[in-house]
Image 1 (cartoon, rainbow over the protein chains, first blue to last red):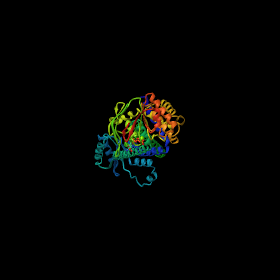
Image 2 (cartoon, helix red, strand yellow; image 1 turned 90 degrees about the vertical axis):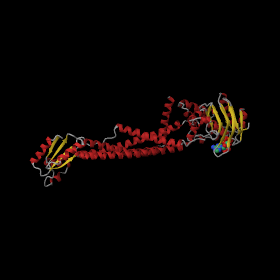
Image 3 (cartoon, rainbow over the protein chains, first blue to last red; image 1 turned 180 degrees about the vertical axis):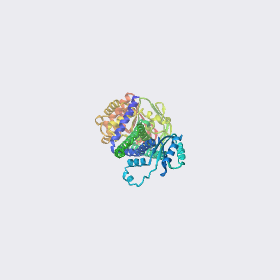
Image 4 (cartoon, rainbow over the protein chains, first blue to last red; image 1 turned 45 degrees about the vertical axis):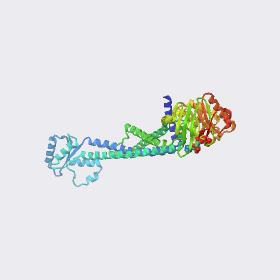
Length: 302
Length: 217
Ligand SMILES: Nc1ncnc2c1ncn2[C@@H]1O[C@H](COP(=O)(O)OP(=O)(O)OP(=O)(O)O)[C@@H](O)[C@H]1O
Ligand SMILES: [Mg+2]
């Protein structure tokens, strides 16, 4: 048992030494694997962030009821009363056309443009919070309200959230496909690296076999190499994303200051980071395993 | 310990390298296999170490039928042997020390104990001063002695040596002969394929004489 542990430790150290002996090749391989993993992983990070914002919006779906421009005071009050009595409405906020114009002026920095308008182009509106926030419930309320007189347009704010959600689903699928492709690339890179190693160490393998080395003994250093190279590639990918986010967040902070909000992109969670590293190490191991199985059998000493 | 019975070996597309070979080497014996080039001496040793398989007949080592052995058991069979190859098969990208270390590494020796044994083996063949040298920088005879050190370092029960003195001058050959004798005296079974008549003269072993693949004496 101790000898066995000792041997594994020994293999580990020898593998590290082998990395150190060819630093350029190692860096190149780790770089290639890192970039290949960073592409799908960074898309995943972007999606996670987008999803976070989409959820923040979609969790509180609103319905905006825009009235006709020529709706008078009494008609506005009539609609307000109808909405208040409606069982589907939980909360109601009136936004007058004057107020809407003021908000537009304040929030967009288009003050000059707004000031130059001859007349207020905005309608009166109600912002409704529905009791039943499911898409079906919201759509029912929208269809009903849009048939009322002097209501020009009812907008379901959840509609774009749903479209975003559908878009995100598609994007997630794309990330999955991309990740599969790049995982394949990682396996291929490792396969080839190990193939070359086996070729250059052919004599050593032959002699080892001749003097009683078992197949697992011969295989082990290559599998270690593959797994460690994959792990290093995973770390490189993680670092690439970290640096990218760091730079982006720097830029975003400036931008957010202008809009008086706070936007910050989040890095991979601890869980996702662990998954990335474990997965990359596993892929490296797998590539090495394939290569070793393919090529070791061809070396039968005479 | 090693027992051949009615062994034939035909290489793919070649002649029969061995024909109807039957003999037994007892534990602790010293046996020389002699015969002209191409007689089948190397082939015989390879069959014993499961490097080649007999076309027919059986090879029994330590009570195990070598040709019936599963592939996974073969490494463990080979660990009983110390093998000196005719072409030595040294690793040229490693130092003398590392070459001799290989069998101990394979057998799972702890590193300090292994280093001690490597030095002892190098000392026995007179190469202790060259432990850091690469095989290319060694003379033909030194390479041969290095191969012998690698074969004996894990203290095998059986030593199979193919032309171990082929490149050695008389002095060193005699030294190696003494080394083999001392192994044999502590109970190691020694089988040597050789042309070296002086060596046979010195050690007075049992001699198995091959000609064109058959035992003639
Ligand atoms: N791998 C092989 N494939 C085909 N034929 C082989 C192979 N190895 C050996 N032979 C043939 O088998 C015969 C015996 O070869 P072997 O190497 O056993 O002879 P040997 O007695 O060791 O000769 P030497 O004294 O020159 O080393 C020879 O005719 C040789 O050509
Ligand atoms: Mg020979």
